[in-house]
Amino acid sequence: MHSLVVESTPLAEAVEVTDSELIVGLVDGRRLSTPLVWFPRLLRASPEQRAQWELLGDGEGIHWPLIDEDLSIEGLLAGRRSRSD
Image (cartoon, rainbow, N blue to C red; front, side, top):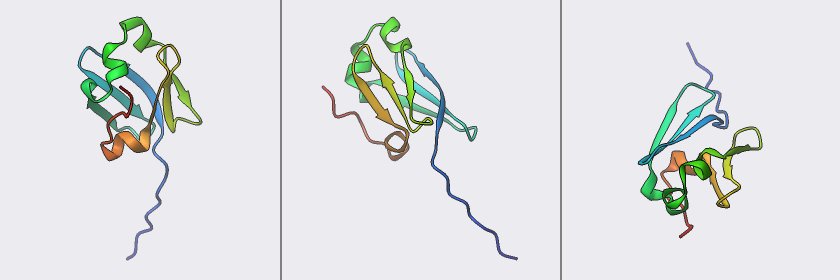
């Protein structure tokens, strides 16, 4: 028996930023947890600024307009840290 592997683009549906972690819920049920120190702009942002996020595209990325930070879900899954200072 053969099985068909269907690859799809991972998409975000929920975002939470704590004092130490960025937590992203994906539409396929996975939850990504990444240390906040990987993202200096988010680390320095106030809780109010961190709470103001929006999904880019269909959930391919996350944008924080108040601090001008953008992260891709693909980058999070690959373990890439933010290039921002």
